[in-house]
Length: 152
Image 1 (cartoon, rainbow, N blue to C red):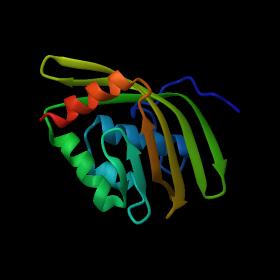
Image 2: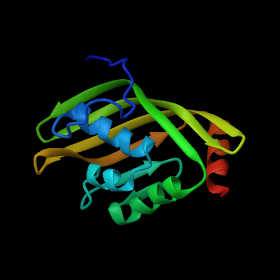
Image 3: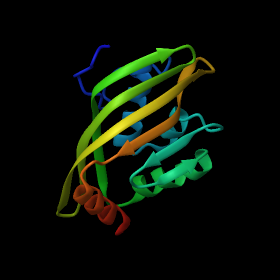
């Protein structure tokens, strides 16, 4: 199993017909606050998100408002995916690794450390995300991040 050390930020080549391209597309959408591109990256009919901010959300109709609120708010969140492995099997691939980044709003800054896994399905000539799970190990960091994001 190859552990990839080079971080994915969204600045890489983003051909969503390749696993790395689909991952890069997600991070370009997230870091660029691009809801239209985010919508393209997810498999709208069959998707699940489970993370520290949104809890468990099923279907794009539940997931989109979470991203919209984050993208439209005053806070800025930037993350990079690193220390990851890719697991490809048929029409699915899993990316499991870590995210590091920063939450910023006004003078407040929070350094983020998140364990992350993403599952993509190959459909209509490209990879689309069907599942994301993210968790923050440090309880104090989790509480601080949740409070900061939820406090408009």
